[in-house]
Length: 287
Image 1 (cartoon, rainbow, N blue to C red):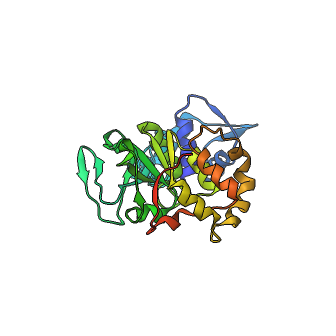
Image 2 (cartoon, rainbow, N blue to C red; image 1 turned 120 degrees about the vertical axis):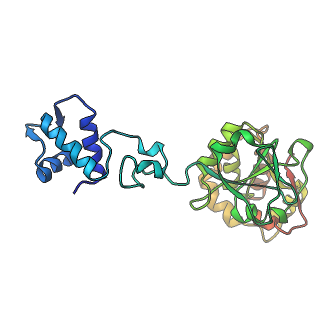
Image 3 (cartoon, one colour; image 1 turned 180 degrees about the horizontal axis):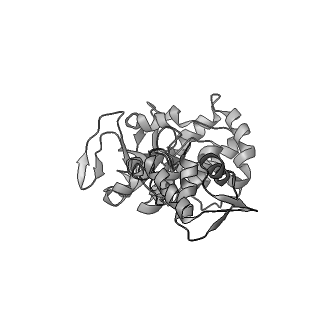
C-alpha cells in the first residue's frame, strides 16, 4: 500500500538524476510490493519506464510527484501534495500564543483598543500580530489560573510598565513555551515575569528574553508570606536540587536576584495563585 513514507521516497527518486539509490527498507518495499526497481548489490536501480510508473502511482493515490517541505505549510495546503493533511508533523496551532490586558485595561492591537470580558483572552498566531502590538512592555504569567484571573490581582507599575501586554507562558494544551519565547525575541519589548516565588519560577523568569523585572507582592509582604507557616518549604527542597546551582550563581545585579535572595534565605516558596483576590499589591520586586 502506498503510504506517506513510501510516497516521499519515490518523490526523492524522481527529483534526482541518479540511476541508483542505497537499499533501504522503504525502497525494498517498492521492489517487493510494486515490482518497481532492481536490486543490484547494495543499490536499487530504476529505468525510465519505472520512473513513469512511479509518477502514475503517486498521481493515482493523490500524491504530488514533486517534493515539498510539508512542515513549512499549513494543513489545507498539504492536500495539494498528499492525501494526508497531518503529514509533516507540525502542530496545527504552530506559533499561537495567548494574550490579553490587565483587568480594566484594553488590549492594544492593530491600532485598536479591544476590551475583552473577564476570563477572556485572544489566541493568535504571533507572526500575524507581532508588529502591531501597541503596548510598551509585556508581562509573562507562569500559571494559567493567574492568567485567566489576572483581573483579580492588584498591580502597581511604573509609568512605562503600567499597561503591559499579558501573555500566558504556555503548556501542552494552551500556547507553547517555545512559541512565546520566539514572540518575545521578535518584539524586543521589556519583559516582566509574573511567576511563582519558587526556584522553578525564578528559573523561568531568568530564561525570558528582554527580562526587565520580576513581579511579586512588595518585599515586606512577600517576606511575611515566606516566613509564614503556610509557606511551601516542600517546593523549595524538591526544586533546589534542579535549579539551585544555576540560581546561586546569579549576579546581584540580575533582575531575578532579589526574588531568589528571599526564597533562598527562608528556604520556602509561595505559589502565585495565593495572590489572586489578595490584599497584596504586586509590582516589580527590588532590593
